[in-house]
Image (cartoon, rainbow, N blue to C red; front, side):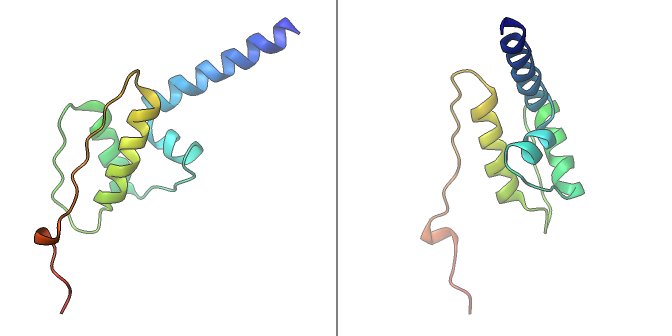
Length: 95
């Protein structure tokens, strides 16, 4: 039985290491998300740089940012994530 427990523990450690280093793997396995190429590009930048700025249309920035926040919460010890909130002043009703 000890061998089974250690393999399971080893598998868990390997999975945790992979989702920490590969955001696309986290999105696929933990969130069940299929990523577009632009989303994958954003995730690699988030992993590799401390600041990432994105100026693009149709790149799913909001969804990708929310998923990155989840990834950070699940993969870092004692995480704190702050996200901006849209206010009524920043958005107008269509029309």
